[in-house]
Image 1 (cartoon, rainbow, N blue to C red):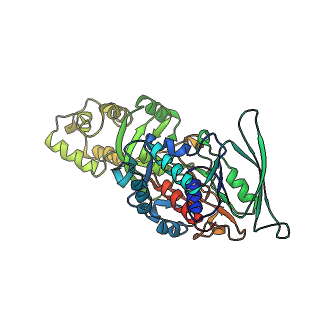
Image 2 (image 1 turned 60 degrees about the vertical axis):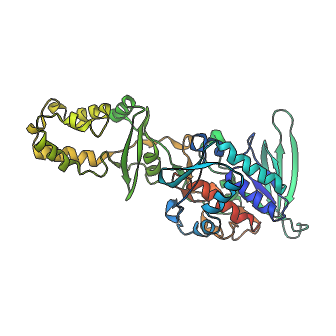
Image 3 (image 1 turned 60 degrees about the horizontal axis):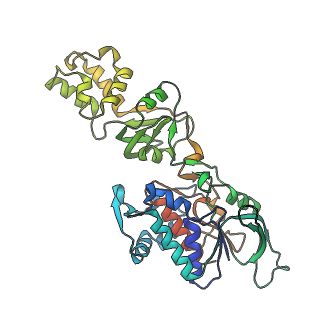
Length: 405
């Protein structure tokens, strides 16, 4: 069998199949395997989450991911990590990270592949894939691959036949780490439908006045609730030179579409209007900005003042009407902003959409009408939330295919 792609899903599939005694060749187009693994989690690899639920995943078919996630769970991967004596820690929202380096996770997968006899080749360009006719197929081979190995001026052209072909080529996100649309091209070749694709887990960009504000506040982080289309995430928001980023923004970006507004609650858990009116009664001589400094950074409060109460900058709370404080409180709890765009695939952590799962077996990851052809990982229309969910989908879908190739 042949696995196309040396990322998380491809490596898991390869080692799982090889442990069953399958002869496995893994082909990676870039100069090394596991590039996304190495850069993930700030170099610490957020490899899974203690709480994996189907609700943490986006797909046109929300039920598709359930089977694979149930059969190879976060606990199975944690067990593998512990067997390799990799120290890890739990962070916010039950996310698990290496205490040391993401290199440990990649080294673990590499060792498992080597022990099982997986043959790994990098610098590989796929030139052609052909489904063999039953009259031409010999010894159960179903697919013929023509590919080129080697970097620089030395090229080695090869043709190999295989019984099973696994597409684990990833998607369009972060092309500098190998993201591409090759998996979609293979899907089209075999008449598989594709769902709409767009960047997910990605920062927002803005234009006009708010971009200028973001630029001035660049580097400032604040804990917020961010909402869009009925989804809310409670996490930190980060101002950048281009707009907004941080975990809360990355999460909500997967639910945002061009033209949508997002709603930011700068004071989660506080009914801001009521709180301000109460402070007015107790500390009426205070300035509004002074009161807000208790909850928000001075630089952010200065920008909000310029937006919402510039004329009353030096007015005491006692001089504010309750109606005005209620209005400012509503804006603090429901600040509506309309991004101009996302930063796109260049910085997106995932690609939303992909190969339509209606054509794929949820048990085996095999194409229903094309025996021996499998799709796993990010190339499929399954995307997880931030927090280790996309890696768990890679481990689970790769393991599922590895048992049936």
